[in-house]
Image 1 (cartoon, rainbow, N blue to C red):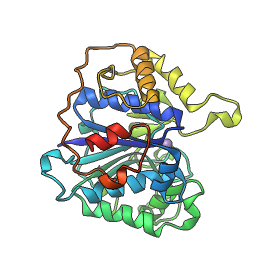
Image 2 (image 1 turned 120 degrees about the vertical axis):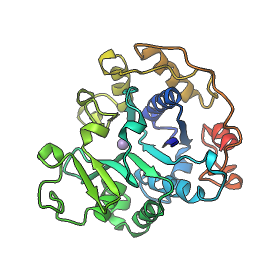
Image 3 (image 1 turned 45 degrees about the horizontal axis):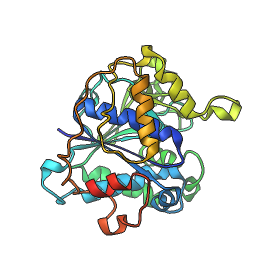
Length: 310
Ligand SMILES: [Mn+2]
């Protein structure tokens, strides 16, 4: 069982660096692989092929899944890719990915509003599943073009594909969302496990979710930015369950990520010794979603990490 944690964001998305630092520290603690694709805004737009940036996760997961089979020896392939939104902050380091895993091809949470049945902020994707690879291809290819740019983008498209039942109910006719009294666990197509949002990702840290997903932009009503909210959360030890420092010796990439690591390390309540970064992955370029030749044209601020290691 091996895991790759993945996120992607453009280098103007400041909260992404802070959340990526939490993903890095979490992955280092538990021995998982972790990659942040930090791209220039133009490259990010290219990845989304003209669609809204929320579609990047579908494009990236498609490339990852299609690049894996047969690409390299299984030893360097993760059995699970765990997608984490760039506004999904990890403060629960006591829960391991293995604790959340069950025998399905796709594991994600219900949405935390009636806007969608599903929330795509955190998704476990089984890499050996051709079913889930096909699902993502279909979502990309067959999505109603209305959702290319309108909320809630790929989330609405995935919900429409998997939840072909009247909104608000599921197949048994009961309520869909657990926070309206529906079941906490729901299975779709026999292959998708939908967890209650309080377990996997939720917007309030008090619910002790695995990931704190900063879904709303509070600046709309004069509140703090997402980056400011993350910094405020990091100052509260009550939310930090087993957090550790991210290894300072990890490869230097762009200054913003270095600064985000510094903020992370300076803020968590219980810093512990962490091993120096190893270069054991140096040859693990098996399934970079971006072909190496093309990747040279990508000039995101993390380019040395992305291109040299993957
Ligand atoms: Mn998000």
